[in-house]
Image 1 (cartoon, rainbow, N blue to C red):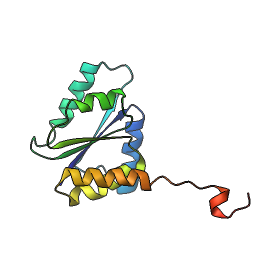
Image 2: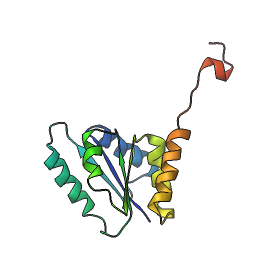
Image 3: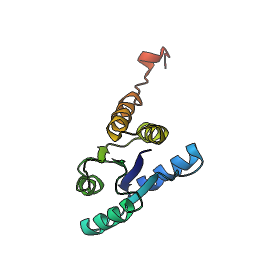
Length: 136
């Protein structure tokens, strides 16, 4: 089983937590959601991140999912990337669902990261009157 950390800006992290509970009924034990407040310092965010990591076994694989590349959650998470921790940015709902569904079934965080990344792309659809046949 691979552990998941969702690290996102305030409000977004809470929305993902609500969505997880809506879809899966509860927040699975292998998931930690870290909400980053708009007024938190980089050191404060790093401390919060370290506390969240401490919940997991040091040797366990962790897929870290952040909302926006280059923003504080992502920048802090990059400092914690190592051989058994991978960071994937641009989190959307299809990615999160795929990660939660597949994490208990995978033993390789790289394989899970590739699957989750692919779901980000396949989960985005263009629907317009031109490709639906609807005249409106």
